Each structure stands twice: as C-alpha cells, then as structure tokens.
Length: 414
Image 1 (cartoon, rainbow, N blue to C red):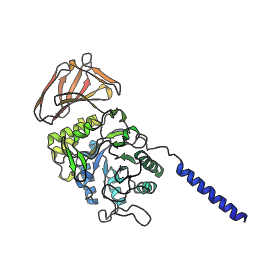
Image 2 (image 1 turned 60 degrees about the vertical axis):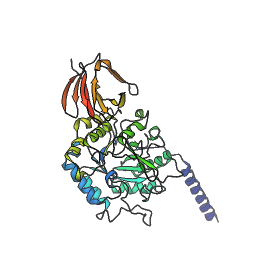
Image 3 (image 1 turned 90 degrees about the horizontal axis):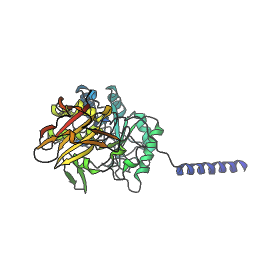
C-alpha cells in the first residue's frame, strides 16, 4: 500500500512540476554576435518560389564562389518555402522532399559548407507555411533539434496561418528552441512589421522584416488576387517611420530580399542596391545567378557600396531632405566618414547643385553631426569609383529619372 501511495505521490509531484514548467515565463535568448554587420547571401523565393531542388543550390553555390560574390561578402544560401514534403513523418519530423533533394538535405548542406558558405532553411510560426507546407506551431523544439542536427546556419521564420497566437510569444518560443538545440543559428524573423518587431525582437533574433513582400519595381504597389500587396522597393523604404533607432549590429531592420536582376532596368537596380546599403539592410540577393548579366553582377559586388552597408558602426541612414523629388540621404560611417546619396524619384532629369557650406548634418538618434563650414571632406564618387573634389566647392551633376549618385565623404587631412 505504501508503495502505491508513494508512486501516486511521485506522479502528482511530477505532473505539478510539469504544469509549473509550462507556466514558467521563458526569458528571450538568441545566439549573440552572428550578424555584427548586415548578413549577405541569397534566397530562393523571389525567383523560384517553391520550384527548388539540389541542383539549383549546388549551381548557386558554385557561382557565388566563381563569380567573386563570396569574396564580396555573400555568405548565406537560404532555401525558402517548399523544401519539405506536405506532411510530417509518423514521428512528427519534417521531411526534406526526396524528389527535390534526392541526395539528402544533410549531404547538400555539407556541399555548401565545403565551398566555405553557410546554409539556411525556412519555416513558419503557424500551423502551415505560406505555401501550405507543415508549419512549426507546436513543434518548435523538435524542429530546432532537427535544424541543429542538419547543421544549418540560418533560419527564416515566417508568419502565415498564425491565428490565435501572438507574434512576440511565438518568436520567443522559437528563439529559445534554437538556443536550447545548441547550434548557433542566425534567426531571421519574417513577421512583416505588423506587430512592430523592432520594439521587442532584439533579444530574440538577429534581423526582422519590416514589411510585406517586395516586388520588382521602383515605387509601385502590386495587388494580389488574394487581397494582399507586394511593394516596390521605394514603397518599403517609405513604409515605416521612426524605426532606424532600433537597428544596429546584431539586430537589423530587414527591408526584404533584393530584386536586383529581376525585371527592373539597370538604373533602378543600382538605386535599389544603393538604398539597401544606405539603410543598412541585410543584402540577400533574390535573382537567378545562372542567368545573371555582367551589369547585375557588377551592381551586387560594388565594393564601395558594400563597404557602406557593412560599416561597423551599423547606423541606418536617413532622408536629409527632399527637393521636389530629388532626395538627399545621409549615413554616418566609422572614422568620421559620411555617405551621401542623391536619389531622383521623379520621372524627369534633375540637376544636383549641393552647396556643402549651406548644410550642417545632425543625426540626433546616434549623436553624429558635421558642419561643412568648419570641416572639409574629400569626395569619392562610389559608383564611378573616382575622386570628385572636396566639400569646399558645391557638388553639381545631372541625374536621370530613378537614378542615384552616392558619395563617400572622408575628412580632409590638414
């Protein structure tokens, strides 16, 4: 009888402890230091959607290395939605699609790693992914262990089919699951900005989306039949106000994967890439590298622009002024340098006539400022890779519609 009593008591205590564990508030925790500058890489979604396979991944990895993109900083290859079968197995595990990945996902990941690159996968906080594959809701710790065992380095975590759960709690659970699994995995929150992740996500992840999906156009809204919209890159730039203070090393505002090389012209691609660099967004390409033009490759690997994006201060740039569609953007850089961009958002040619001595730039969010009356800077034209005088003289140039001029200012030595 005593034996039965103590067995029942032990069971009650165990159940009580389990209940208390479920009610315990988990403290958010991420792997620190995985993204001290904005992550750079490639994601499959913009061009391929769910039409992905191991040959595409291997070819993309080979091109990243052979083209010089790896040397330029592109590190991650991320497979988006559609990499798994439509159902979990009998043990509740995710199953990489054997038709798309006949050699096995682990072998493919090892191949990417053998190239000196990193590998990422996609899932979703809801019951289903956005394309209808198994979501992670209720399987967070099981899936995190699976990702760690595969050896992935990056998880993009979407927000479809999430009725009845809150964003902060859902992303906290997945963040803790990744930390518990033990492998350092960069956590990319793809919550679309609906629940203001910039206000709460820094302890959880390394980057967070601030908008819905991008669309390959300069400044349009593309309305889908299902009653949602994708956005041109300048629409995304304009979408959120007052969020730049939340972005910085290891906690980035993510303006979405890039559409460089997808349907826009080279001028617009150049402006798109420049603006992503100016606002310190992760640089995740979304085009088909196998069909990439020389012009697209040159845009994506421009050393001067990448240096602005990867600047160690990690400060997101901001719009300094707008003169009838000719916008001036500025970004503080390390060692007292500044990036200044002139963007023509209009449909007609504009004339830049910027008299430096008429301007004093002040970034109150990050306590950075300069006056061109008291300091002189040498000017480097980033896209043309040539010197452009200094700030003692006004900068003058013609600029075509949708084009951009980016200058790097370096304080002149006395």
